[in-house]
Length: 273
Image (cartoon, rainbow, N blue to C red; front, side, top):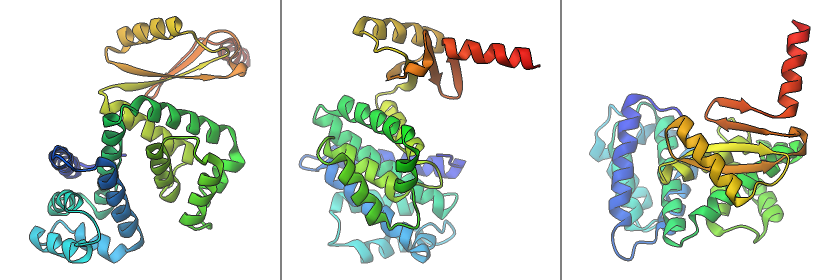
């Protein structure tokens, strides 16, 4: 997600307000996250409303009153408190407001997973679902088919996943399927993996290996990569027999290809030049 300066500031205010709201005793982070995602869906459908609440030249208090007049009694007061900050802030565009609200909603769901002691589980499930979708082009196309209704795409996902993943994982992936934002579904789920890691102040290292790594090997690899990149990393390993010996590692836009397949391809390019 790319945000301009004003929107980055607005997102910071919204996340701070979310933290305050979720710090209140009795507030259900999962419920707040799902309510905020329902507003994301509303603003996605209602273009005129999205433009009205995202118009930075209008009166912020008028924008807050508009949202409350529409949603009072339909979402909880904690969710409305977050929405007050979101629509009362100045965003670079209505589209960036929508993207920012989605980010805040996802964070609320991650907070709920963290409080339940399931954040690692959710992050791991997201990674594995992304790899499943990535490996099945037909599935990727079906889940991202904009001709099919959002509810139809959700139903397809539920039929595939069922009760095999945590409830938070399912809600997060359903949102990607409902609002793919012009990217592949697998890439959208990977964005969730990265947000889950960022919540723990970590970046993601995607690793491909021909064989499953032992716990000790994972620890050694993570330690070495953290020395190289000088930051904490969440290691996610995909077993891929096409790699051959060695590993393929991606951190951000940088790829370290130490596999047999990678070395053969490099040799082919040298011979062809």
